[in-house]
Amino acid sequence: MTKGQIEAKISEAVSKFEIEFMGRGPKEINTLILQDMIIIKLNGFLSKSEKNLSENQQGVKLIKDARTALFENARDYFEDMIKKIIDINILSTHSDVSTKTGQKIIILTSDCNIEQIIMKNNER
Image 1: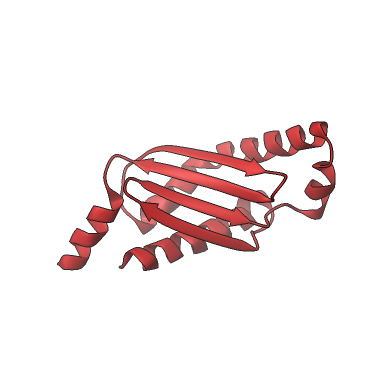
Image 2: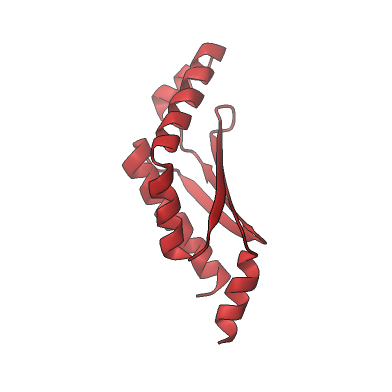
């Protein structure tokens, strides 16, 4: 598979994950593989209720805490899902949400240069 095909498969899997574990999928999702990282940006993932809650600091904290807890509870499943698409060792997974922009960023780091592995596999 090419880098673009792998990025598309990851985006598709993350969208399904968001629907299954977080209750709804994003309006848009982009995945970028860069050296030893997989960077996933989701746009438009907040529900109407969350948008309303985000109008004050207490609501922002509540959204962030709930989203973080939900993601942490499903972290192993999430990482296994990525490993099925691209066989790498994941060192860490980071996630944060912006209630201001409605974006979520997920960054996974690996113990190898993923781009080089993809290039080597495509040379065979």
